[in-house]
Length: 278
Ligand code: AMP
Image 1 (tube, protein in one colour):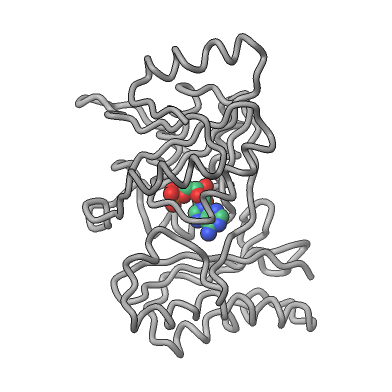
Image 2: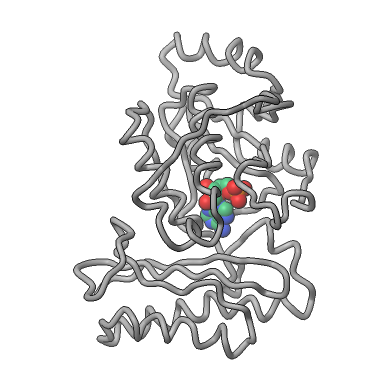
């Protein structure tokens, strides 16, 4: 695996591969990698001839009171994990934005509500950095996790609306054995908070069971998913049922729905979601 740090190095490395007709796969990340990230690398490995992973903690997707300064980092550990998962190129940019950077990608549609409302500017920052990575790497396929369900919808919309020639692949959420969705931010959880964090996946599991048993009301399913969060005394940011395809708010499920959850476990904001069909 080669580690590259500048756009020129990327271009010099990837252009010959592209000319040779090799398919390029991209997995953008913010590092502090876990099995969820590595599952994306393996998916890219299966779909492309050259796999590029990027690690960049993107400042423009963090709000002023968020965890940018303390976001966990482990360059050596991440490199070893990527090599083990079959990554060919690690892009660790020295810089991403000029001091007077002033161009952004604004995505409407699926960015409304949920994290889009609670984290103003977040998806604009995500879409902008992913658009830049798409230009730098020119991947044939890019792989993202359904853990960030709204992000995946936003990026699919951006690709469609701006005619990026890249296939977007979404991969299932990888969980800890007890059900907690893997996240770099789980590293923030104290020993007392770790069991309380289970309330997110348990609420979603309970809602999925209720839907299997015939419950169709989005509001009642939301209440079922919310109950364990309140029982664990977590500060709930949102619990919302949406149409799984369009992310539109729903009164009556017409097909599969997604319930998306965000809650603070102590000072740590975690998200999770689950798709369920009537
Ligand atoms: P991040 O490093 O948090 O920006 O995440 C990079 C990519 O990994 C995104 O596409 C995430 O959706 C994906 N990802 C993060 N956690 C998981 C997980 N537990 N399972 C699957 N994909 C994940």
